[in-house]
Amino acid sequence: MLTEQWNALCLSSDPDIKLTVNEMSARGFRGFMMAHFFLWQNPKNAFTFGSRFGVCERLARGHPIWKWITKLAALAKQVIIWSNDLDAVNTAKRILSVDGVDFRTWEQKHERYNMDTKDCSKKFNHAAAKYEIALHDG
Image (cartoon, rainbow, N blue to C red; front, side, top):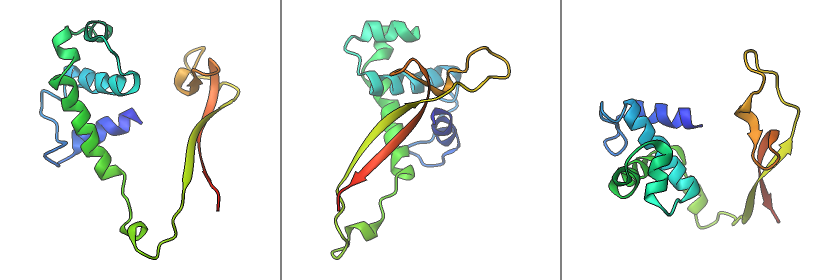
């Protein structure tokens, strides 16, 4: 998922999303990853957050982080498409409850390493499949 987002950012021609040559560097990729970590963890201390990624406190707060978050938000507008038919007057209303569920599985054998952490669940500390389930009562 992150690789697809990074690829979309690098290839986009939209001025809100388009990356500069400097932003497509390893330093830019670190900023991209920091923005994802910031959105996931919401760290309270910029010094600790910056030290996790090996950058100074100034780069771990304010504009350097929010620049990437704004690019991700603009990318989401292109990827998540709301059909206008759903806003029509005669459209049936649907109320959904969505939840993510981890399901423990056998670990797939990796061709090179003794462990494959790609499908690891932090909940089980074990290989797992991740499902997103939507429920509708109607």
